[in-house]
Image (cartoon, rainbow, N blue to C red; front, side, top):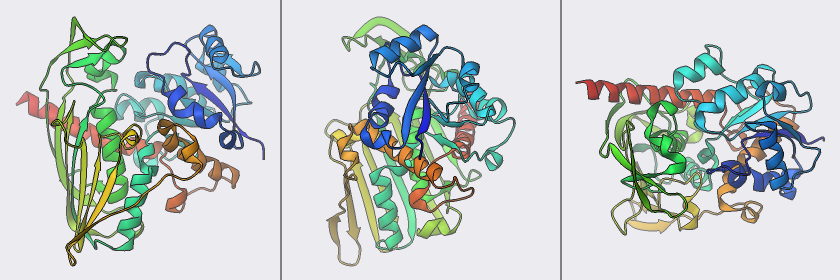
Length: 407
């Protein structure tokens, strides 16, 4: 079968933050990736920038270079457009290709907010009507080995019906009182990319994928902006400068609500009718020497605990050990739950391994007739309607925050 022809948006020779290089390129350039995909085009801010990227990453001269999203959308030799730019450029760079019927893979966050995504990308369609089968959203935590192992344990019935769950996470890739110059826009809420909409969002998304969604009517949140003034950090030296930026993005979030089990019997995971999920997230480091991420799932017969270095099970946490433990209430024994990468994933850098799993699942779907409707859980992946549903949750979170700050 002919490979899926890919156009990369945002693969840059000079980008300060280059997830395209670190998260996507290793798989696409691997022998396994090349058995399914071929990079055929680049889109950057200009043709010259795209040409520089092509040369820098030693891509074939046959790879086309574009500086205009409409020109890329008009290319009949592109099947899949993959967007890795800053969130407030996602719509402008991908909407033309989506309208032309191309498949799209858009990194998270999908857009600046729910309203922008619905109005400008999806033509007024909400999450209930936004299904685009030939799409992927970069919520790869859903297919992380940790999330997959938790689903396996819960489906086995080892802890019985889920009664409640609690998460405490820290966005500790950033610092408490400063922000790198390269991501200073994290302090500007209207841009849409910050610790809440990225680190917290990725985490709450895979928690929801395992356990089910909040009943939004029961969801209660409080957010706080503890440090409204942040120092600008030099990305080269890592040291704070004398400059600072005023932030309007909260750096502490506490939310709780009733869980609603996923449709289709939540795919074998039994959730109590009144089960509660509570989640606390704080930007910056945790108490020294303590885990940056603790997730417990309390069941009728036992309890699961996941401990990691920070809230990045979707990407960066794997440089340190991630533990899953199970407390059996009947025996009062605590046992380790083993997990591992697939052998082919171990050949890739850590940051690209879970992204690669999204590519694998999309390729399997594409190469097997592109069926419509739901797939078995082991073949499913997050798509545009999943992203819109998550943005709807965040619309309610920030609605409550704005009401809180006005009172």
